[in-house]
Length: 75
Image 1: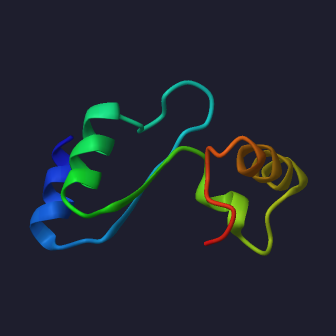
Image 2: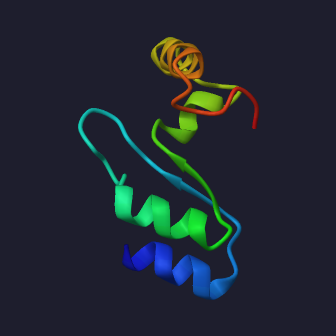
């Protein structure tokens, strides 16, 4: 939550909370706070899923999470 408050104070417009197995850095409270203050919050998944050099595991996770709506279909 502290990081999200700092992001709001700094005028950051996009934030990604990493999630692997378990909750990772995802916080429902911080997600809500960020969105209420105009930040586009991606609350789950791993940024490596979207990289051009992503390994097979990350590519598979990306496809599955896109299908379930857990991460955006496009970046």
